Length: 93
Image 1 (cartoon, rainbow, N blue to C red):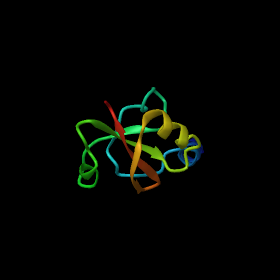
Image 2: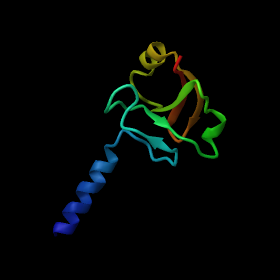
Image 3: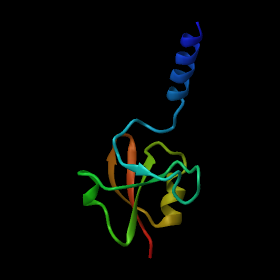
C-alpha cells in the first residue's frame, strides 16, 4: 500500500508542475532571481541559432502570467516558441 501512496503523490506533484516537459538545456534556478519561472538556456542543436555573446537566452513557460512585465523590464525579444516555452534573447548590455 505504501508504494501506491508514494506513486500517487509523485504523480500529483508532477501534474502540478508549472514547467512543461522539454529537452531544452535549461540551467540555473531562475532568471533574475532564484525561484523565477524563467531560466537560462544552454547550447544544443536547436538553441545554438539564438545564442549571442551580448545576450542571455532565456526560456519562460508560454502561459506565464507576467510575461509582458518580464519583456518590458528586461528588453527581451522573443526568438522562438517550442515545447510550451517562449524563448527570449535578453540583452546584457
